[in-house]
Length: 394
Image (spheres, one colour):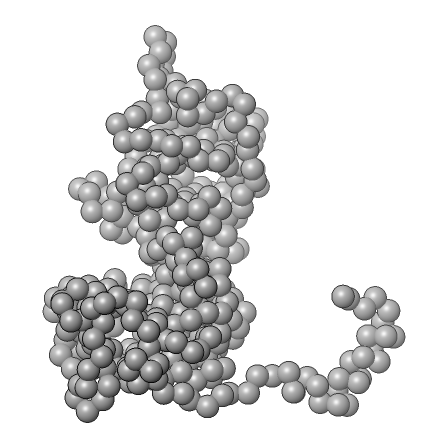
């Protein structure tokens, strides 16, 4: 509830100052808690998690060379510092999960990519990403990756500092962050802690509320001041779009194809969606994930007004497939399947660097329509005009 009377607010403010309530509200740093890798503190989420004595400490490893999972039993983590040691015994994605929801479908994660000799200049060596509705959004968070110096043998010491929306990660060098995330994009703010991977973990400590000088409020978004991004769209509910199907059907007139009404009926309903941070229209948050092996299709549209007939260069980030139409006419079609020969830079991730095409606009109103399919991890788009001279859009 907000106080509307200025005098009442002044009295209340004076009371706070005189009694020291403001200073009392500031969280104090809790004591560091150690959680040795034993069954007393950790629950096995996979049978191959093996607690061992290793190099003078309690540790956990895989008993069969496959990734294992464990979860801390008795701590709900919100803000603070998490530290641990990890030895890269096996290749893969050794991951720390935190703020895990009770249903385990939503959480934040930091992981290391290790597939051979570490390269200190490899930008993809570490990554932060959110898991939403059980979908790992790694392919939507290209921005949150960084190179790091890793020890191929022996311990790597990792420290995460988490406060509100922000996170800093230190790996081996405790003076300089290896990765800084100005705004975590998960939907939980508290939850359990867990580890996954075919590695050896040990020496886990948690210091609740030890957030150093890290602000809780989300940091600067580099797209915030850029009016070239198309941020406001209308979106449909997704429909099944099995492999082998085509949303275009042939017609005996120029341009020779049109949208199959099975996939975009005239009576389809539209809902407003607005781009989030990084100008990303994150459809996983809005529409949920796609089940393994299935494929879905949705439509997005927006209006662009031009003062005269003109062409504009549009840059587009997307996952996984797009079909672009302007004023009902097909204009551009592309794919961005990770691991395929045609995947877009950077390595199949959604980025404004994925693609570009020329957009012909007529004088007055123009409808930009995009079909977007998904079957692999997260889905969404980022769209930006090269310039906004002579055009207007929301």
